Image (cartoon, rainbow, N blue to C red):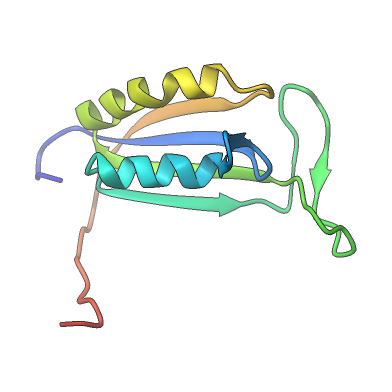
Length: 119
């Protein structure tokens, strides 16, 4: 990301059980973002939540498969984020179950790269 360029945060709210073909949707989106050069991506798994369907999903330790809320956060220059969203929009619109996508302008206060273990 460059300094003094509008930066945006894209949030995609889905379920931990959502898939695109055989792949988890959250993994598919993060790998696509990496391939497109998006600056950063994080997948957050919730413990409790509900969406437009009003079905409450929560973590229960005895369940083998958890259907939990997931938020994918992507950050980069606003133009790159909007272009990336347009590439994944058809997948999101074709999902069997619902999702929510938001975007907000943000101000990056610190961007410090770390060293990899190989350096």
